[in-house]
Image (cartoon, rainbow, N blue to C red; front, side, top):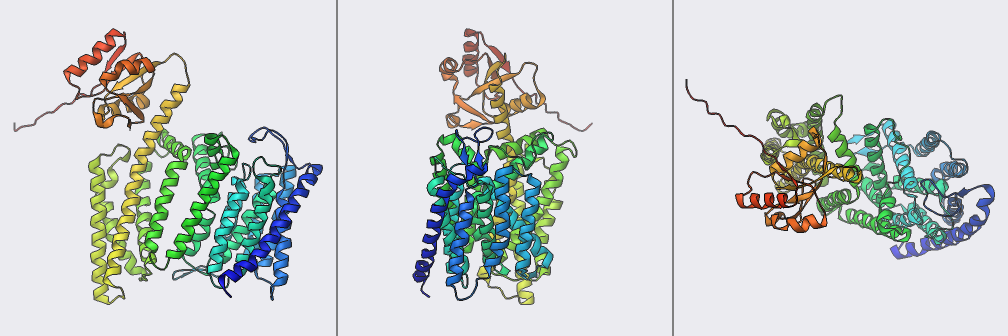
Length: 617
């Protein structure tokens, strides 16, 4: 059947779902308050008036009515019907009860696991990953984890008017295209078309200002439909691409869920008596964007754009998987890094705070020394497997272990793990890069020897590409992890300084002269060792033109020594800290004259350096 003909026929059911959802939502707005399903303002809620919740029941009814019409149109009953119907109805009733009575989180999780088990036992598939045939219990664990993760991801993203419905619409459209381009997945495409129609019909009354909320009834049901349908699209011979496309299509909810787990786990470690991992907060993506934009409608649109970006990435991976798959995955990794850098500031700060405080048992230095070898070995193994998989290489496990050996042994016996990476120098990073490069070359030479000695079927060009990809991946991940530690600590210092400045009180305000090593040492000394007279830093001044406007050690370079008068007038301070060993006598005199003229306290920070020569006695 022609591609556009299929779209036209399935589009009819999307229109039917849209009409059912639109009509059902209007009825729900009038009926739900009579049963006590009202979302009252206050607490973590930002709406000013009571709004009906549990509106997802309109989506549930519209979905099953529309899908029932599709099933009757089909010559045979679709296999996916029972996997959606039985556990889907259970979750809908669970969500409706939660919207009315606020059920305990642990009870809801237990019911979700039960529904995920039903999904597995209705289709107990055997999945293979490469040459590995997963036993039934592993497939069952994977199914339960998949369903629970996606269901709760949509539950978490439903926090502002129109966010969950709009993001679901984008994800459903992306997955509909994926299923249409796959063989024998028309039923799954129909599910996505119908869900798209349901979401758009509900969005008519859910976009800001919302007249009705999805509630847990709708958010958990949406996540469940995506989880079951996405699982049907994962090949029984599972590949990285078949797993990645539905994950990217659902990118915004899953990314927000990942950040929430990361943030809450770290905060729980920092404050064991604080809120639990399953307790809600107001640091989700939609909350952060709302604090920046101040408008719910604009926040929702930004999240739609972000969801569309993930969908484009998913389609790019799909179209490029047979040609330039390496490029697609490289772009994916780059986009994920950019997203983390732009959107995960609270999580990075919390992790940096954890590093800064240290962990009492084991000590921080011991923890780093144990963590880095484990992390590096995982990166090396994963990079090698991914390099071969992307270029469709199949090698015996023994050969893979031999290829891992050179770099692993080089790192283990080089002494690189004696470096304390919070205080590493550029020489340490250069040495690490040389070790990684040498290990990749040795692995390449070893593979070439094995290939020609034992006649492995592998072309020379593909072999070189695999080795280059292997080197680039381990270089980016291993060195990037070390740079992340330094970056996180700098961010921690900056955030700590900001929090101290906001605390008020009778504190000194200081300006630092110098943006070099002494400045870094002084800031470390101030924050870590403490000072008898605590102070807040206004910023840094330095006469190097290349540093103007930059941020160094968590503080902004606000000018040069010639700008002291203007800086003092805009942001008065009472102390000047000279933390530079290269300051000229003329500039030192300028700074001291200014301090005397304004009766400012002067502090000269220096490090005593001694050189002792040992000769023959």
